[in-house]
Image 1 (tube, rainbow, N blue to C red):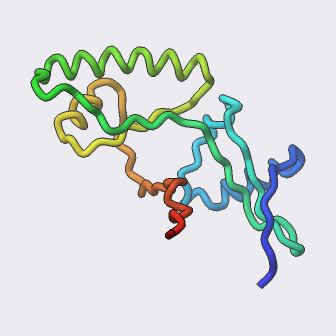
Image 2 (cartoon, rainbow, N blue to C red):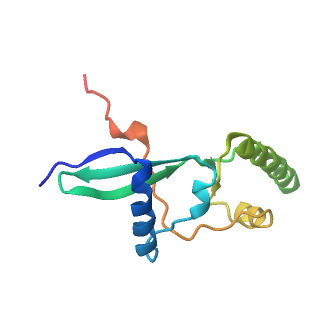
Length: 139
């Protein structure tokens, strides 16, 4: 098997990426809006046969693991989330971040956030937790 390398894409390679994104649109979740924010780094996988593929990586916010005081009412929790969303939107615009994702199992929270423009994501979502990549050394 040939060695595969990865580097940042060159400007002149972007039309090829666009062509392949369009050809593979049935199986990818490509959103051209991510490029308008200029927050995407595009990587190229290649070997001696040429370019194998493009891997766009966008900066996003991930909201997860809510932690409210046990006696907080549903109204207080909702008001807190509503206030937080205003901060989140301002932060996103200030840092040119195109998207935020909300990760929760709480069905009440899922219903609530959908009233505030959050859309359910209907694609598989996977996690790479970087600290898990290296196991601690045994003594």
